[in-house]
Image 1 (cartoon, rainbow, N blue to C red):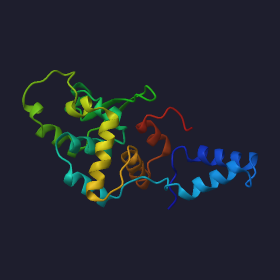
Image 2: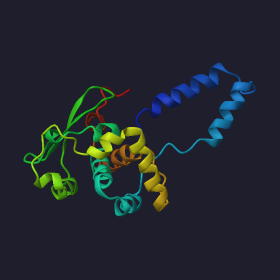
Image 3: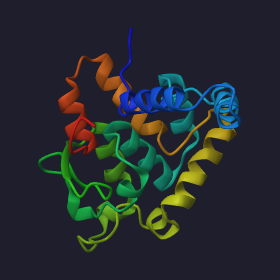
Image 4: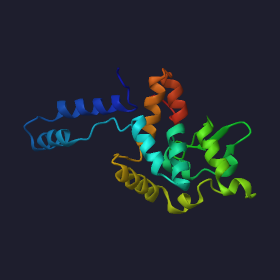
Length: 193
């Protein structure tokens, strides 16, 4: 099965241009050849078993973050910026404002995420609609939250990056046969580039 990665075409085009414009025997060519040997694989997606391990050890807001990330494919910074008003429990929709592109995306609310939200103390006690869905993680910030995700992965022997959840979500959609244009719309991309 062939997996198409977003941006892979541009990466290949850049590689071809650098190979054509610079001879392999030059110093820069040698450095790039060494970088290629040491490069990590492009596929950063997680297996279902790895996802289950992460969810098993995650607690509180981190568990909610992982559930939302794995079921929506959104960036960590956009997830921790979610406000309670952006989660419509009646219609079963989450409204994301994609900070990178400025696009607003509506994604259906996964039953596991709904259950997690309903189990939170804030679901029983009335709170302001502008309250963050993940208040502790929002205070911590995207960089520290991503770092905590990596540490959580190390705890269970899973390599996790900030993009792992996005890659996993896209891989799952592609395996289901979802059209590329639909995937790009869900991910908040403006064009096919």
